[in-house]
Length: 240
Image 1 (cartoon, rainbow, N blue to C red):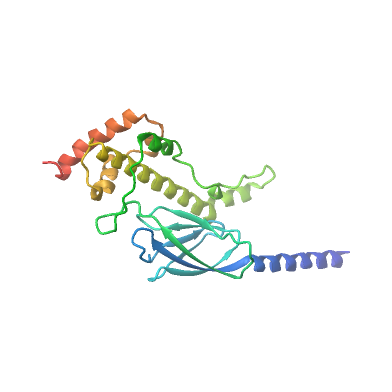
Image 2: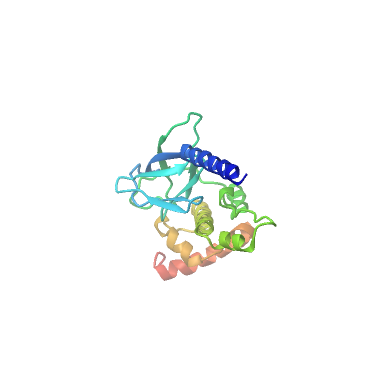
């Protein structure tokens, strides 16, 4: 009886291993700037399911082994964190993807693409969604029958830490993006006169938390930003 049970377990193990191997694919990735179309080196490719992190080379390329069901995140300072996964109806052993990521600001040395400024109502709708992160980064629900040791391992494991790191980065990306949309709006309506090159420094100067941008009224945010702009413009010398 014991021998028979052992044989069944070994068979199940072999089947599981074979299926896992079939689910593993090679991903060839090329990452570039959505504005300049230039390759980006050193972009972190983070897989929260396996806690693996890879990086693009000098040509913006990376080769990695992943599971077909994995959701990956691209992280690069100054760019919006991007989520992607492989979706294909045809089973393949190798996939090639070209992905562009969007800079949080165009900067002075980058090509500028003129976009219609968003209305205050559109920005408000986006403000209300601040703090939302992809469900793939949610911590798995610890079942009541899970042992305390297993629960503690999940909380302290590198996977959990990687998920929390990504969630924090995505929230910060969104906070800065919406703040910049507000600054564009204020500039367009001549409430402030702040060059785009100063946006990031001004956002750091204001240090307004995500909760303030999400829950405050348009009046409260506008007044706070204008008050900070007056102080910043004097200290930075952009307004004599």
